[in-house]
Amino acid sequence: MTLGVGAADRHGPGARAWVAASRPRTLPAAVVPVAVGVAIAHATAQVVWWRAALALVVSLAIQVGTNFANDYSDGVRGTDEARVGPVRLVVGGLAEPATVKRAAIATFAVAAAAGLAVALATSPWLVVVGAASIAAGWLYTGGPRPYGYAGLGEVFVFAFFGVVAVAGTVYVACGRLPGLAFVAAVPVGLLAVSLLVVNNLRDIPTDERSGKRTLAVLLGDARTRYLYAGCVALALVASTAVAAWRPGSLLALLATVLAVRPVRKVLGGVAGRDLVAVLGMTGALQIAFGVLLAVGIAL
Image (cartoon, rainbow, N blue to C red; front, top):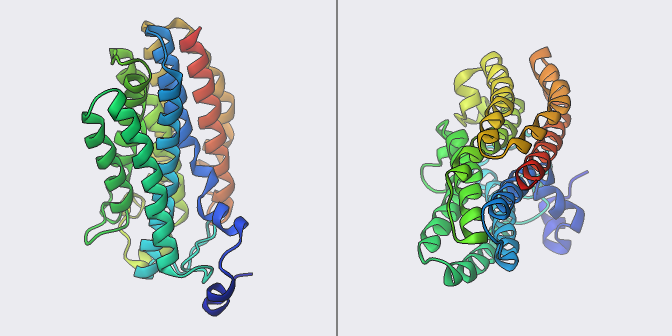
């Protein structure tokens, strides 16, 4: 049951609504690249743990801030009114748009503060990287021309939750940037993309009606299902390249067991609310893969 706007004015959303709006199933995309990056730093140099911890704060805050920003931007545009996924605060009448906007800005501010502390201890160039990451989070569905509405969401997710997050964490944690960081970023980025693909697959009918031209809308239902399966399969295959540096990374292939069920469901045609469960399975796969890859690299 959702509150009306008037009720939202009087009481505001409860803690459960805010947690749901932060979209916990998407948080593996923020945690995994940091875990893998720290493992690479540990394997190649000495980890500065307080900086690694702040890298995790930055990653999580950007992810949650992006989710709040999407809630706000989609809500004020009216493009998420028939949503079948997790609760949205603005469209659901649980919070005023201005409140959700302030929550997004505050969360991004946490990321900026933690990132600035790290930049002061390492390199001022990280300020530019951090600013670009926050801008990418806001402009996914915000601004005059949101790139998420132009089929570019997956490209940016791969770049920022794959390459930038892994390589950035390695540099922050140990002050070095070995080639292994970029190789390991490929499977990490692909699994982050798979989360977005299955999310957008679920929303194809409503996105088409509201004019959101996501990559899933552009490709259509059938091709998007193959794209999801391809991202998962390619991530597992790409992880074997890491073994050229760290043979223990082959441990990540054990996560294949968790990949079978969601891929079968997607290729089998599940749709609508059933894809919410697949999103959770994909998050679990990403966490398991990330942990195994990180452990294998660190061994």
